Image (cartoon, rainbow, N blue to C red; front, side, top):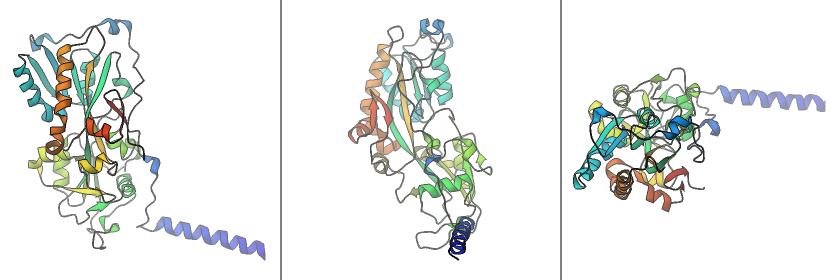
Length: 337
């Protein structure tokens, strides 16, 4: 009789758990789904001896200049005018081009630029011998929805479930009044850039295989803003300064995560979990060390606090004061909790 009783309890527990798993509103999230925030700063990419002996040479097409700089599409709108002003004040000819992290990495690999800009922490393949990374700051990545969406905040695990495809309709969530959300299917939109680099969207889900097969991928930031702005059931992500830069593409609404809005203060304290890391590189080895580049870097880092409000960037100096981990000028870890 006792044996049958234990069997009955086991079966009942199994049916109870199975029922929970099948309920549409049940959320099961794996805390390990997010990727690494940073790579190991001690790592150096192995290169051939001929590359090591090569020096930085500017493209002849640029002409005679003192500095050649390539910045990603986040740092370029923030820093380009400041760099041009610095050049005029110091009688320097500076060439500044807008690119992506991939374009920057390619030009650094060819040793054709003095300074490179990234919107991500460096991956292993970015860590060339003699190259040093300097963190300009970090900026929150906002989860974006259509303005008509009455959901204002979601849990981080809920966000992961949404982008995994475990939650299908907005009505499975509750708004601030405790009422179901829009009776619409959730349309996830992703821009899976810089897959080889840690941080950024990989803090949400580590790799493309973890995302829902129904994810609609876009290749550009304007497309991300436009699609979210024109689909009531959509959810995507982008940093707030890009939302402002491409506001002509349409209006979107930023969600809070775990009750915290994507602001610099919430990011600084570690309460907001998604962000991009903005890095600037210089060559520190004797053969490629450009003194103009180092002086410009010092100037830009000193100006960084002025960018917090306009571009929603937490400057490196504030991160250091708040316990974020650095190796030299490079951000390498989140604050201890």
